[in-house]
Image (cartoon, rainbow, N blue to C red; front, side):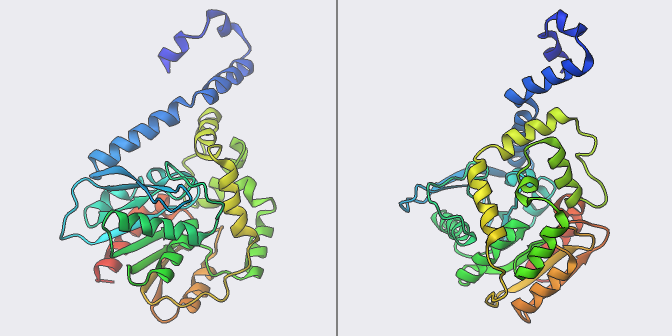
Length: 330
């Protein structure tokens, strides 16, 4: 930051503090320096600490769909394959930062960016979780991955469920974490009423205030964004939310305005549902409701003193549950 301030004309240093701050925010928003550097760091971290490298698969399905994955640099035959599916709030690297290194020791990880996140994209107008699911599975097949387990969180839970439902011959086991899949129309309306605002303004914030509200909803023990300055949040919004904002809004609107999933087909796979006991987005009651809908092969694990973002607040406990369940000791 010191080198940056040397570029500021000396006369600016005599401006009122509030005006100088506004000018700095405007400059940093036009070139998101810190988020760009953080994104580059995450790529290096995924490569050197997690043993993963990027791989973009062109599906050639007429919709000009490409899916970006982080895949093992060296795929080991003795490790099972795990496909983590992220939710809103950034691409796969940001969401699985606290989990990827630990999980990579036990699994061959194939981590996709959902369509319109990261480098995954499509010209299709289909905004359903079904299309996301089929794109991921087809991308995996193009890379020679035929059998795998799924770990899906929040919005990714909708996608992961469809992957397990549509491709039972491919999905061996599935872990669903803090997801609204299976909620009734009444449950959905009650939760939206509690938020008290258009959920799109929270899911895809336009300003730091709304981003802080989103983090407050997601966190229970601590909020890492609480003390982050506004200019960093502006950068995050510019890179993670404004990029293909229209398409991301359409994805969210499809879920919000769609009918409840009260007639979900039972899954044939062993299923683990993991919830934080302080989840303010999808309360614990959603977990038990979904368990009844899935059938006898579903079990529930509750992590105490944890909110919606289990992957950030309790990544170690979540990783232990994922490993135990998929490797067969839970």
